[in-house]
Length: 121
Image (cartoon, rainbow, N blue to C red; front, side, top):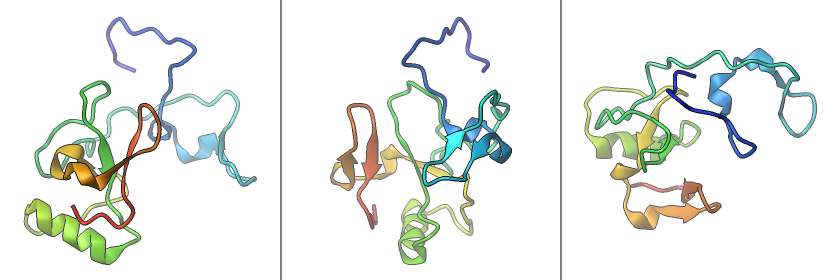
C-alpha cells in the first residue's frame, strides 16, 4: 500500500477502487469481495482534483466526490463552476470538498459526507 509504518487493525478499510473488477461477486443484490482477493490498484493517475490538483490522500481532511455522470445537466454545471476549460470527467474523476459550499453536504455517518442529491455547487 506504500504507506510507511502503517499497520492494519480491525477497523481498517480499503475502498473498492484498489481492486480489479474480477475481484467482486455481483451475483446477489449486495456486491461482495471474493475470498482471497488482493488489492492491486494503487497508482491511479486521476486521483487528484482536476481544478486545484489536490491529491486524494487518506487523512488529509478533505472529501472527494465523483462527478454525476448520470446527471448531464448537473455535471455540466459542476464543470462550468470549476472553470478549467474544455475537459470531460471520466468515471475515475473526483472533485474535492473545497469546491462546494457547506450547505451542499449531508452527513451520512460519523466519518462520511455526501453531496446532497442534485447539488449544483
